[in-house]
Length: 139
Image (cartoon, rainbow, N blue to C red; front, top):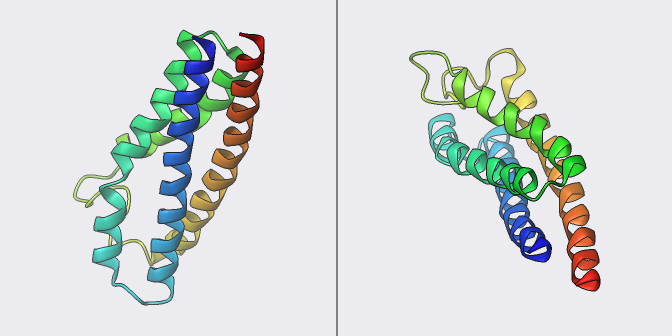
């Protein structure tokens, strides 16, 4: 059972790493003016909910399997994703809004957030990999 939890978490983490890289590439394309703000924001906004679901799935798996340290590691990112989704101002297209993405350094902050999430997901990937190997050896 424990190995299955970590295998599923590992697959989920791989998907979240892919999403983080996708966010970084899309935001850097916007920064270099390869795509316009509207196209960039529509591409990124459709992946906000799957990212939130993936992070919450990993958090719930750790809660159900009673891995408290990893749960505490996952919880802040899951809460941040939910907070970012809930706090979208009325009238905006989503968490990424084409009219505001170039204002007040939002592009840089979105890029920084994507880089931090990539580092976080890579750390989680190796923690899940180590835990999966440990669970398979102990079984």
